[in-house]
Length: 415
Image (tube, helix red, strand yellow):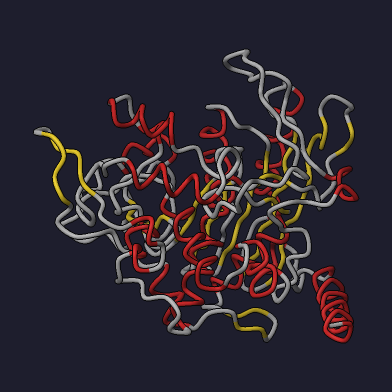
């Protein structure tokens, strides 16, 4: 046991050192980005910090495998005016979802999970789902699969996605890892009907929380432990976790005291406070550089710095549009204010299908997601580009920054 502990500490130490050296570096102009045009991004962020609309932000951009831009703006704590460090730690919210998808796919590559099997095979509490229809409740045409959970076609939802009686029941009874244990969460979820027959409609949901619990059921580990051993540590993501140590508190970011548009107080949750279960849908936190390394691994089709965490074809599958002609994706278009028109959905990430239609420029095949606390990332394989934007803007204003940052990064591409 002692020998295992020593080995673990040595491995962790080695990985921590490696993680301190993020990516090979280059100037923006050396990788086909205009330094002059990127100043537009810096000016826009600085102006909003000065106006009191944004506490601060960190932006990291890699192109052609090199770190070309990594800047911090504003304050890690707007109350104390403490400057934002580049290694500031942000709650990732739904940018946790791609981690849970990768964990699930790792086990699928090992044959420990089957994406097309009913999720109830792994989580018996989720057997026998029924579906709410206009005429009442009826048995599901088929049971939801892990693939359904990963692409949000299982028929489950978040309670805040509508105002129907069923949405209200979800909001009251299914509350995720910050409020419920895993057993409580699964019990409540299984007691409610689905919104749609599985595989027939896209509905933003607790699907990645379920996938994370499937990973736990197979590995007999908490999701955060599995990800630390199999993803975060191997990739040198030294500040990404489901519960941060108090020793890093000086780098924890804080939001403004009040929302700049609504004037309502913004609640703050300590990053050291562990959730009741490691929710794969939104409980992790980390830095821009850690997430840039994760995105670069996906751009590289599963490998980074000689470490392979997924196979090439698995990453291609994850980042392909999974919504076939028989899937009603009209609810996905509700994200149009966040430039989601012209997108389909893969496993844990949205996937751009058209060069136009979306509210911002981009390339077919790029994939992305964002978080309710103000985080965003995207990977554009055609342009060999990974971009990460981290901020603490949990209100409606976060949608503005998702469009602003995307526009001002893309307009800097010169070749």
